[in-house]
Length: 109
Length: 112
Image 1: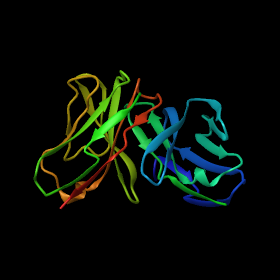
Image 2: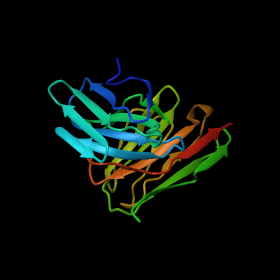
Image 3: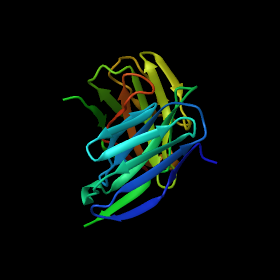
């Protein structure tokens, strides 16, 4: 079993829809990251969370430490949101970063 | 402009020919790391460095070496590349482990 599981693997949405991507992990962590990778390949860090909730524009990220679960929400989705969204966790011990497999999001106009 | 740079961006080489991929950051970050990304396997950590002269193995260190002689640079060395090291490589840096990471643009490596 992977230490970081994401769902869904693929997601197609219509422009304007509310989108949720989920991340579950099985290890102790010091922080959780949400990353965005566009088709060109570059990776951008969207959020770093250790508790609670963060919001940036139309993006919201939440984490529940007790349930070992995080969600990334996109409100009023737009075709430019089409990308791969990757969850990654900083291990509590070992200074390592472990990644989920990613969620491929396509937003149609 | 705050950034992480990698060179080269694209490289085709042959088995056994030593190569170095450079990584440099201008943000005075202490933590730097190398990752490889492969279809179906996602991103995996190769090596990381907590500070100058402090490096440690990630999940897939076999066949790679790193050094951290200066704070800004963290080169990835493939002493004898093999075809299974064909991949997309990313360097990243941050002020510390657990903090926001800034990624380089990636290096596409093909080993024939």
